[in-house]
Image (cartoon, rainbow, N blue to C red; front, side, top):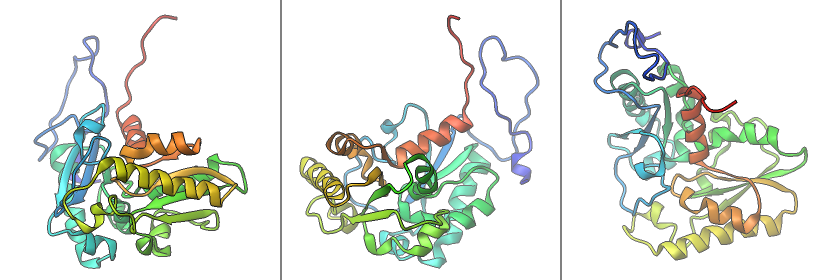
Length: 263
C-alpha cells in the first residue's frame, strides 16, 4: 500500500462519535470526496445536468480532474501513450485529494482499467462497461443487453475484455455517431439542440427493443447519455444502466452512513 494511504480511514462523523484520535494523511490537502472522476481535457459541447462532469448531477461532492493533453481521438483510438497521464490524474486525486474510488467521464477510458487499477489503492471503475458482467448476472438467461455508444468502432473486443467482459454473445450495440445533434459530443461542434438529441437517443433505444424481443436491460456507454436515461427507460420500459448508476454505486460502497429512525 502507498505511504499516502497511511492514516486513511473510513468513517462517518456524527455529534455522537466525533471524538477520538485522527491522523493526517501525508500529502492530502482536501477531503470529503468519495469518487474521483478523470475526464478529457479538450472538449467543446454543452455539459448538461446528468452529464458525468456536471457536479449538479450528484447528491454528494465528487472530485474531477482533466487528463493533460487528452483528446477524443486519442482516447477513442486507445492511444497507449496517454496511460501515464491518466494514472497521474487518478493518483493525484487519491493521494492528494482523498478520493475513495476512481471513475471516468468516457466509456473508452475502460481500455486503461487494468493499468489504473494496478496503480492506485482504491476501487477503480474506468468505464460504464464494467457493469456488463453484473448486469448479465441480473437478467434472465438468454436475455440480451442493448448498449448505446457514442462510437461503435471504438467498442472493440479489447475494450470489453479490459472491462471484465467475458461473454459478449448477448451484447447488442447501437451506434449514436451518425445522429445529427447528439454526435456533437464527438465532433465537438460546440452546440446542439438538446430536445432533438434526446429524441435521437430515445429513437435508438426504441430500435434496440424493436429489433430484439429478448432485451433484459439497456446500458448507456457514453458519459453524455445519462441526461436521457429517464426518457430511455420511459420509452423502453426496461432497466437502464449508465455512468451515474456506476458512480452512485461506488459512492454508496465507499461512504456508508449509519442508519437511524423509528423501530
